[in-house]
Amino acid sequence: MIFHLSVRSNPMLRKTNLAVWRAWRSWKLSLHSSTVCASFGTGPLDRSEELSSVSSEKPPHTPVMLKEVLHYLDIQPGQVVLDMTFGGGGHTKAILNVVPEVTVLALDRDPTAISLAQQLAKEYCGRVKPLLGKFTELEALLSNMNIEPGSVDAVLLDAGCSSMQMDEAQRGFSLSKDGPLDMRMDFERYPDMPCAADVVNTLDQQALASILTAYGEERQARKIALAIVEARRVNPITRTQQLASVVAGSFPPAVLYARKDRLQRSAHVATKTFQALRIFVNDELNELHAGLSAARSVLAPGGRLCVITFHSLEDRLVKRYLQGEDLSNLDHFSPRKQSSGKKKLVDANRESGEVYWLPLRRKVITPERDDVNENPRGRSAKLRAALRR
Image 1 (cartoon, rainbow, N blue to C red):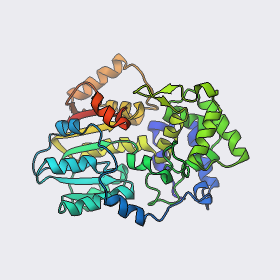
Image 2 (image 1 turned 30 degrees about the horizontal axis):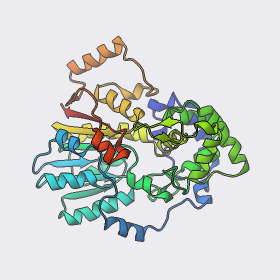
Image 3 (image 1 turned 180 degrees about the horizontal axis):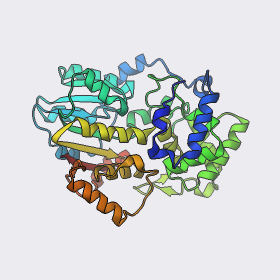
Image 4 (image 1 turned 90 degrees about the horizontal axis):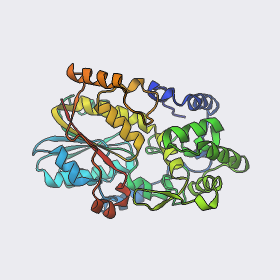
């Protein structure tokens, strides 16, 4: 089984999730030949017919805050742009249509997304360069293409899960559509990589509660973890709606949809549990940190960066990174007031030239009401834009 131990040992998150770390370490030693995903048929599928039909359609999602992205990136003709999360290609296609002779480097860890990028490259005569890989693999991918550090003019990083992934039940991201409990963004590349079913069926109660607390900010983490452990004693939890039912069963019926989203619509009580598992399975926070570091490396001085996030964990990480904080020493991303000492340190770093970013707008940018009504999935999006010094 493929397990990126060095990534999960990052001190940035290890202190907060010591119970999780210990559970993963023991799990790695105990699982040699198979995973729950493989045992219950959640592994790779034959997707050739599906990919051909998807690639012939329009991008399967509406790009979030498109006009804001185009405004703050301010791409000029002939420039090189790095789209670090190609997804359905909505942002890239808009850039190609608006700016003449621009070249887009289209990165994504999902082979399905890269198949769409390859189709777009044919439509735009090679102006799109597809790159299959994670943020942690970007440096090697660019080196193989002879793209030097400091040679990219603009970078867009759209974090999180794409609509294309959410809409496909077989991927296991959505609690509203029954499918295998998978949640791996790049499972076709790493079929032995642990999936969400492995997590909920293998880790102990303390580790599960730590995951839900750290990555879902779930206040009822212990209660949900206990419900999962008790349920899996009867039958392994291998389906998305099976897990959603287990989580719902740990709450009184009256509060099942008591939580509200930004549009004040009812939200299922398992939403944060699904978020936490997805982030943990895909190591998303460490990948995001690596992506921000890669953006700093590839951008030319004066180059522009736009980062779109969809929950507070991501946004805190991006905000602190752009302010010049050393994230390698952070043990969590929980809300906290910046101490006067920390503020003085950041100011000193900025004066000494160790802060590499100048904000293009001081406050975070959120979608306009009309955009949220048109694309409700983007309701929680936050955009931060900065200039590379």
